[in-house]
Length: 366
Ligand SMILES: Cc1ncc(COP(=O)(O)O)c(C=O)c1O
Image 1 (cartoon, rainbow, N blue to C red):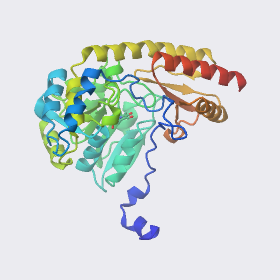
Image 2: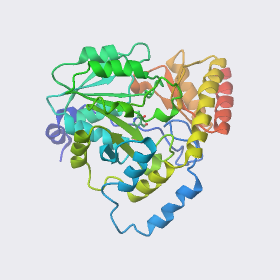
Image 3: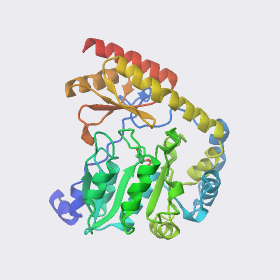
């Protein structure tokens, strides 16, 4: 079919979508790079966890458990949450997409925050909904501005806490105040992809709020602290009636058998979790200090990445391209509307040292 016909027969909002561009993972087709562009874990899961995938390969002729029971059991034990209120997905982006499909259509409005995760407007537009963007206050998500955009047409509010790419958080009290002001017929999605990295005691990942607020859906991922980005595994937690609805529309076998089993096991690896949290905590403090000492402006973070501000776009492009020459990949945030900003994921100690050394050399020559 001709392009013109295709553009006419597709939902108009789908024509507005710019394809999601993930962080690059190789240079010249070769993977010997330092990848600091997608906020993945720099660590490999413990061997005793990954070896079970070999056993599972012998069962590849069979479908996985469509209900991901083994994984839900492990999630419910680990997070002390109700088994029947969990949905598992092929990454948390699967869950985000299901939410938009279930609760919105061409007559709906969906609210996202400025400088928010770029996949929310995509899932909204796939459903045909109109996207309203709430201005931030500086780099912080503004609950007030979100509330100000609510109309009778509002169906869903999406935000990440901590937010990607800014690394900011909404603390528990403010979160509760905000949720209390949102009408109960609007779904509030609290995306906790980076929840585990937050060390502030006044933070809530939202799981404890589901009982009181049946209209919130918390989404979580195994792609970040649990180091399983390549397996594609995420989950959501909400009131029973919402989960039952999402369960009806998900793909019948949306989580593969390796992801289900390895996900269930990695949750039990407390030492691995603590190692990752402590490593991240160290670099949350150290990396901004080192970057700032080189004359750039690094913002504080509650997640596993640092937002870096440069004076000029030219400088930013030069930094990115010179780092690429040294086989270091970081994230340009131009498509987030953050033209003078970069995002750097926290890597291993040696990756961080190589990155800082390279950045220092590049900045000297600018
Ligand atoms: C805020 C946020 N939500 C969701 C995701 C998607 O995670 P997943 O790998 O589980 O699909 C990401 C990935 O970068 C993210 O930053």
